[in-house]
Image (cartoon, rainbow, N blue to C red; front, top):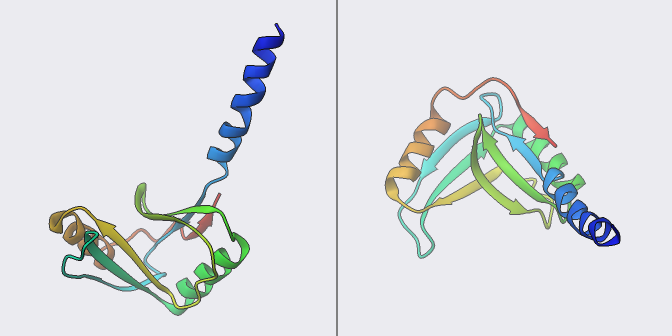
Length: 123
């Protein structure tokens, strides 16, 4: 019986950590423009410029979640993920993709009809 309790105690923190990862949702009021760029050493980049409203929301999100893993999401798809180490006030985001086709598809999604909601932080 004690062995089962020890196993449950070891598993529980991992489950809690997984549930506390954050999401920041990109939506039509938050995205000003996007651009797919030429391939780099690490892949095909797509850059996103947020609107003033989006940049303010993202800066607040990054200020309050220092040291935490976050996911930048469009609809139900993950655009990018990273650990937040510093606040990001610029409103400039980017994702790196494995192929030009995937990067171009993301650029089209971001430049096209984005959902109006959800917008911003979700945890």
